[in-house]
Length: 60
Image (cartoon, rainbow, N blue to C red; front, top):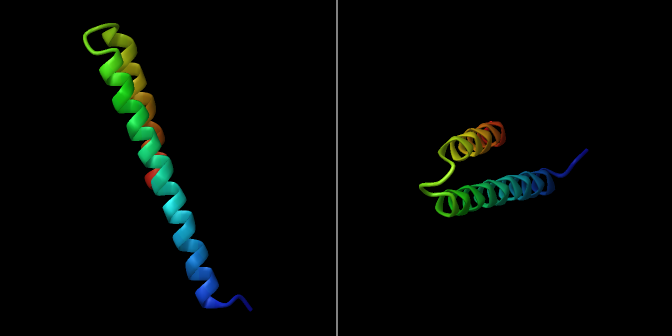
């Protein structure tokens, strides 16, 4: 039987990892928006949709 304390710690580390991944996605999205601000609007919108889609999957 798995020790509950160990299981809880593992769950916390998994959540922390997902949180970090989310932060990285947000940072990347933010940087991309600044870089392409005012230029190539269609491409920027496509990137935003792509990242928000991935974020929705991660947050579930």
